[in-house]
Length: 189
Image 1 (cartoon, rainbow, N blue to C red):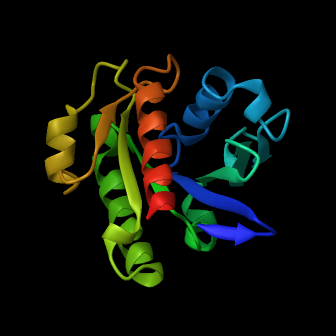
Image 2 (cartoon, rainbow, N blue to C red; image 1 turned 45 degrees about the horizontal axis):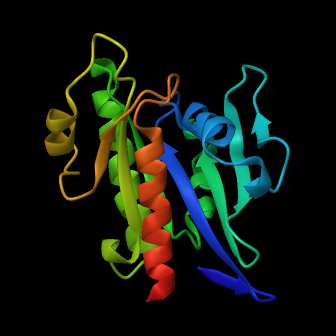
Image 3 (cartoon, one colour; image 1 turned 180 degrees about the vertical axis):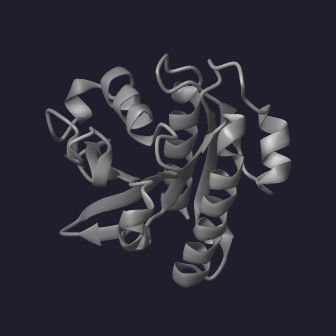
């Protein structure tokens, strides 16, 4: 949480493998949950590759009230841009870990969870200094692992989690509401 000119800013990061659905999740939230009066921009700000993948990050600022702002970022999943992920971790208050539930992505998910823990160790005294919500995405597909298996395999059992589908928006409203609730609770402290 940062305070700049009397304004309070929270920074929330969507973190996960390439094509896990981070941008799709953020777009669904932006288009379907955030009321127009809270949107600080008309569109999501993105820097994309020629293939349409996120190259550096996507950015959405929202203003909950006249003094409280939340800035959402997605971190690129491509290994080529790994340095930008480390940069985006600075000063975050919360993270949505977007896990691609497809069986073929298990090893990639493990690599990203290891990277996530390295960044936490680099920027935080403890994982408890960070709000973490896990989104087990692509629940609309058939060849996926169940979230309880992934939670155990990725050692994510201690975090709140949701089975989601970024395309349909399944369970994104309660996940988003929980993140905002955690931010407000942190503000009260």
